[in-house]
Length: 354
Ligand code: IPM
Ligand code: MG
Image (cartoon, rainbow, N blue to C red):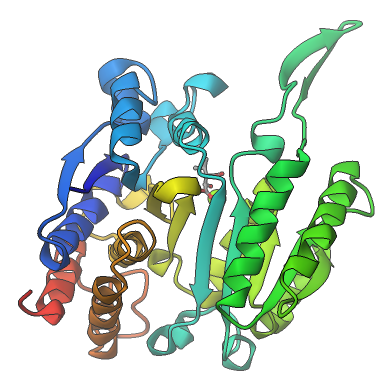
């Protein structure tokens, strides 16, 4: 029996999670869920952002659905106690090294993009971001004082096995799509990037039907705006992937629409919307629950191996959008937005009986 650990977290997290969990119950009534604490919510109750109990249950379930973490209330805490540490700890402890962030332009929402329609037509890319290494976790990190001068430092470090396994995920992903990997790097300056590129080049021949190209990260930020449709699978180290995936999300015009899957070996996975905790609109029934609902679709597909149920969820979301229903983030002109709750209800209605 599969159990899913649900971690609502902070800000709009609990609101969007509620809608998504009800969708999961509709399409997979046999899947049991249990709820735990993470982020600021965990700090408030237990004084740590990732309580041992949450970690233990995450290991036991292997599959986690998460809302969002963070908020201004906890911003003043020292680095190691911030809500974000809870998420980073969970990714690391479960060894969820591959973060998949699909960013397709949804035809019904094409006019939500800040770019001209001709720049977004046909955009359908996926960012494959390395998630448990690089500068996010590298040692040494911290602060010290040298000769009376204060300083702070992080380390961008990758081992060969870390690069190999994420490169393979990217090539496998591209193999199921349009068969092109764009590797994002900064090898003109960083030793770690030059090394990363060598390993990626070395893995490439294992996937002869996939084309590999390289793109400097600064140039990538630019070309993505000009010609996003030319990209298929975008392979990034942790930090570049964090940045490029937000840019890709904005191009589609719908940060509130984008799901993500963080997966490791052996079927483990963490599924969460790409957007954050949006504390400014928390508790006001104003958040878009579709990114979390679509994260449930990724969970069904990647962790539970139920592609049919995943397809049903995606079709229901498409149907609701095609009918013109919009949350505030998506509404344009005189479109009247609906709330979080109503959007969830409309998706469940579009699912019909199970
Ligand atoms: C993301 C977020 C996280 C990250 C934060 C909340 C730690 O920005 O998932 O992209 O930087 O990885
Ligand atoms: Mg980010």
